[in-house]
Structure formats: structure tokens, C-alpha cells
Amino acid sequence: MLVVYDVLTIQNFLSFDKPIRMILHVFIASFALLLFGVILSLSIPSKYIDDTNKSYQNYSLLSIVAFMFAGALFEELLFRGTIQNLLFIFIENQWIAIITATLIFLGFHIQYFQKPMMLINISIPSLTFGWIYFDTNNILVPFVVHFLMNLGITLLFKYNILRMKR
Image (cartoon, rainbow, N blue to C red; front, side, top):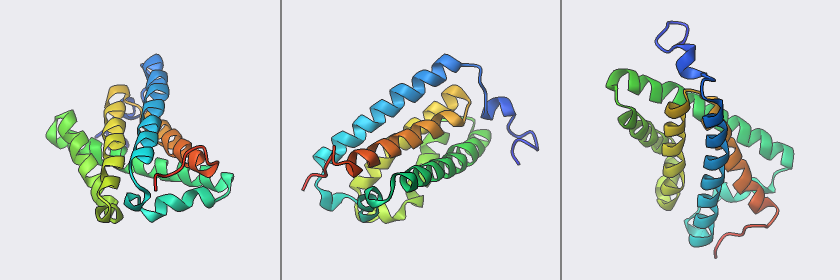
């Protein structure tokens, strides 16, 4: 709707002007955020991790891929594609739009308020996704990074390459 009514141009939503930058963002951000998740997992006792995050690895590989794909797609379209863009249109400051969208994203994950360490676990990636989106003008880039990060950490747990600290 934002594109149809020319509030957002397709160029600002799905630009392919910077292909090398997009590829670099996907590889570097995916690796860095996966490493961030591994470090947190090794540092934080499992009692501080939300229970829903512990159960994903019990699903089949196809279910995990489908769930991670759908979750990343929904969250990126909603939080970066819609909310962050609307905030930017009205506020005209990228970082205020990114931070505000991240705070709304945190509010959306209300179950994490009982385990505040989980809020850090999603704050850093959310800020990163917001920055990547504005830097590339392509919603696919933060979506792919989000998907790869979630899929990677889940598979590391599923195949016991990574275990939660007790």
C-alpha cells in the first residue's frame, strides 16, 4: 500500500543499486550475528533463555527452515518494511526510526520481558537489520540476514554443535 500510493517508491524498498554492498552485508552481518548468538548462548545460563527458543531444534529440518523463513519474512516486512519506513517518513531521521522500530519490536516480544537477557539477544540484531535496510534500500537483505542468523543458531543447537550453558 505504501508503494502503491507512492509514499515509498519501489527504489527505496527493493533497490538493487548496490549489489556488492548487499552481498557483503548478507555474509558479514549473518556471520557476525550468528557469532553474537553463539557467544550469548555460551555465556548465559539456560535458565535465562525463553523456553520457546529451546524447543525449535526438536522440529524436523524442513519445519525449521519453513518456520525461520516465515518468521523472518513477517518480521522484516512488518518492522523494517512498514513500521521503520513510516517512522522515517514522519521523523526524517534514520537512527530514530531504527531505534523506535527496535523498541516496538521488543514490545512485540512480550514473553521476553520475564527473561530480560533475551531482549539483548534480539535488540542487537534488530538494530542491525534496520541499519542494513536503510544502507541497501532493499528489504530482502535484512530478511536474508535474519533468516540465516535464526536458521544457523537453531541448527547449531539441533545438531548439538552448540549447547546452552547450564
